[in-house]
Image (tube, rainbow, N blue to C red):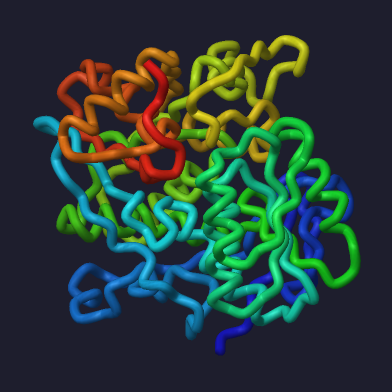
Length: 370
C-alpha cells in the first residue's frame, strides 16, 4: 500500500500531515489541497484494466481499493451533432458523487476514525452513506430541512444516521463543521477534503479515453461548490502535462440564476466572491448547486479563467424545459442534473464540440413542477 500524500492549504501554504484527521487548514480554516502530481498512463496501457474509475490507478492518491462498487466508466451518448452527454446518473448511488465518495471511504478506512460525518443537500450524503456501509464504517449525514424525501430515504436505507438541520445548506454546513472538530471524527467533506476532487477528476480521464485520446472543445459542468469543475481542471492539467492532449478545453461553469454567487463574481471581474449582501438568492429547482458561499470560490474562478471558459446561468423555466426535453430522449435526470443541458441546448456553444454531465437520476427528486 503506497504512503498517503500530505495535504496543504492553497491560501497560506500550511501543511497538514497525511495521517491527521484535521479537515481544514489549522491557520485559516480553509479547504486543503493534496501534495500529489501524478503522471497518467498512455491510452494503450489502459486496455484490459478493471472496468471502473480505478483503472486510472497512476492518477489516484490511494491504491488497493477494498470498497469499490464498480463506480465510473459511465456511458457517453450523443444529444446533438457536436454535443454529447456523459450519463453519470448511472452510478451505484445514482449520482456522480460516487466518484469522490469512494475515495473518502477508502481514506477513512486507512485512518480508522470512530465516526464518519458528512453534510449534503442529498447526493453526496447518499454516496458517503453507501460507501461507508460497504466499508462497515459508522456514518452520520447532516442535511438541510426540505431535502428530497427520496434522498433521505436512500441515506437511511444505507444505515447512516440522519441529522436534519432546521435551516438552509449553509446552516447545515456550519453545524457539520462544528461537529467535525470533535476528536476521532473523519469529516467526509466533498468540499474541504481534496481526495474527493481526485475522485471527480476521473470524469475527464474517462472522457479522454472514450474519445480516443482527445477532449472536446468545451467541458460544461454544473457548479455549486465546484468539486466536479475543480476535478476536471486537475485531470486536464495531468493529461496536458504528460503530453497526452495537445490543447486544453475551455471549462464552462453553469449555475442557477436563482443562486449564482460565482457567476456574479465572474461578471464583476472579481477573483473571489462579492460581499454576501450583494448576492441575491431565491428558491431553485437546482437544489444541488444552490450554494451561496462556496469555500473554494477563488479556485473555481481561477480554473475557469485560466481555461478560457466562462460562466452561464439558467432560469427555472429553462431547467423545467431541459428536464422534459431529456426525458423525451429517454433520459430521466433530476432537476439539478439537467442544468448544463439547459444552458447549452439552444446554441450557446456555436459549432464547438462539448460534453455535458447528467449528474443525478430523476428518481431522486421527481419531475419539476410545470
